[in-house]
Image (cartoon, rainbow, N blue to C red; front, side):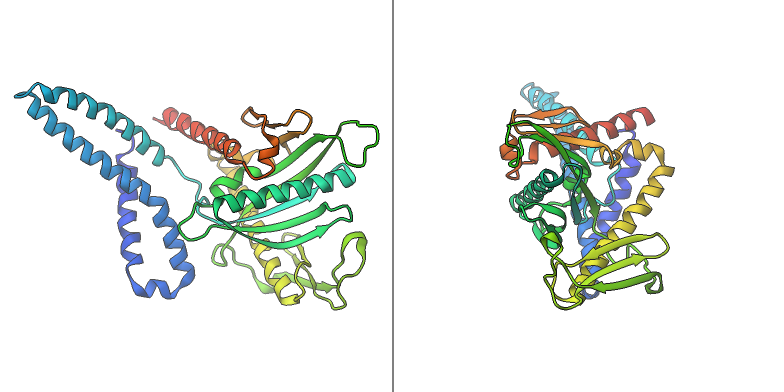
Length: 359
């Protein structure tokens, strides 16, 4: 632990400051600040708990060694405590690794059909349901911000907001690995000769930005309204409730038509716009910090194929970490834990390797 006392001291000091701030009733008058502090407190609490446990174990070891000079039976207890301390130091070392600052954030998830026509849209619908079911298993709240269905029951595109309930796991720390091209291999329902087709859908995962995270000048926005449409392009609304927001300086365009209210579509569009602008700013910063960029699995180019869903073999393969499992049916029903855990392990191993190199 010789390489981490400084960082540990900083984090424990910050824990004390955040704990003190949260005890101040005035802080809770600002819901945004209180939420940010609450998330940071939840991130720092495991570090504080591990440090306290390690201090207690070291104190017990000192006492056992002292008693062992008079009573040999305490020698075995001392050896047991030494092993426990080794494990606690390793755990604390992992907790002290640089963290993704967005791990405590909620997520905007966009799923879009790609190459493959109707089959791609059907697969995009499968992915959408997979994420909805995974979120349900985690106890997260899911809000459909926008969806463009197709006549066969697939989706051209859909946008979800996924939010952790109070006290639940952080969403970004688990869904940040989902961005990229997802490929499917199966016999389409429209295939009469039983041939396996390959198609793809794209997923974009973004940490949801608070208003304080991104400064948007209203004068930089062009907002257009139009009538929303359903499958096949037919009009499903007699009023101009759909909204298209263009951020002129960056050319970023967000369209929303899911709600019947123009105001609701505008609010949903601004949430997605903030998330996209925050992600763009972070990617620009990450490009300058190449070491930090290499240390995270999630920095794989979003245009790359990240995962294949092979229906004939009931196999799911994540190409970034070599993960394979033969429970595709369960994965599509929301059982994503194993593949996400494999990606998190790879992320941690890369960070540990970087820490060893720096040390």
